[in-house]
View 1 (tube, rainbow, N blue to C red):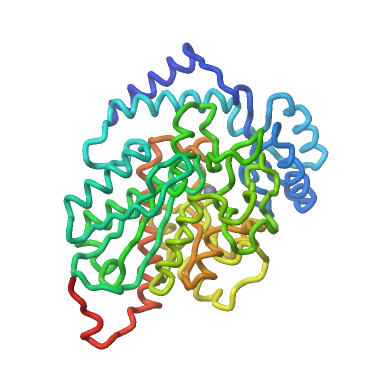
View 2 (view 1 turned 135 degrees about the vertical axis):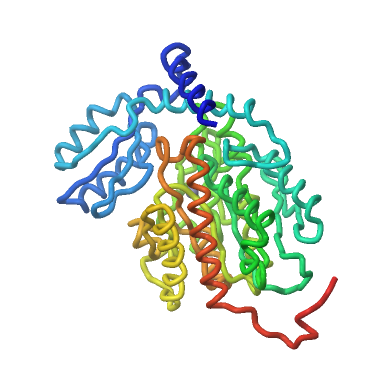
Length: 438
Ligand SMILES: [Zn+2]
């Protein structure tokens, strides 16, 4: 493996020196910005810049002592630097040519696909397509017919099958509690489906070690909620940073943010009515078939569901409701306790520091119409958005990072699931009712 990565690094060099394919991000830079003073003013300035979508993309917002990450068009870089100087902000260039980074990554991913073709298992060597992920769960269902169940729960706008995998311990007990997990809401956050796949592998293929996690709980996982967007990001380096769905939203623009499209405080703060915006809420709540599918799943498991977990990147955050307001739910202590279990487990495992807290307060802005608030409101007592760590230019950890990222995330998820299990034990039904064999 070491030799292989060495070869890959060498081909990387020859690629960047020779075949410099240009793309629309050529010359874009990503800045990391911090400010010791006047942080509130600077935060407002960044929010304003984010509205100039042809020139700026604020990858992650600014709050307190945390660095913001801003991608800037070549034509605006001089102005941006002047503006930051005016605010006495400190800034570093963390990517001097986003176009080059994305082209190199695209080439690497192409080579990795050839080097590691799908062979019935999905390892952590590379990112996988939606088809490969569906094939993988189908193969698992065939191999573990008494423990793994698939269901096609809907179709994406472009007609891709959305399939859930339900993982049990095979004891055929019905009406267990449920953990509901999804990935791939946002197209470019590839580490999210990769984590869902690793979670599936662990729960299915490592039963002995994870027996307690399947004792009184079934796991229902939809690994890629937005497959049209996910596939689109894999077609070229130009499309790598696509976030939304692929349904046309106006004559000029495509896509809705599926995580602003839920019918709970829809189109309020932190969601845009502009069809071209990255966080466009859609023409109406549940305009996107992918969001409808997820909402249906949430409702169908709401009575047994104890934890809903939606995997995103980036930020190293475990966020809980509310996201539409700065208010916090009455059960904030329960949410915090479970999030803390995940935070602590990850810290002990790898030293990665996650921040935890109510969504709006922790990220510094609201995000209304999102799935986590929706699931919590529908009855899941624990509902989290997990923002995985920063990688690459932000949303694109290189393939060489997949292994450690998915493994540390799994450690956190397992710890949270164990805490949920302790806090919400399966209600003891009369023995006859509880053990129904099918
Ligand atoms: Zn996301």
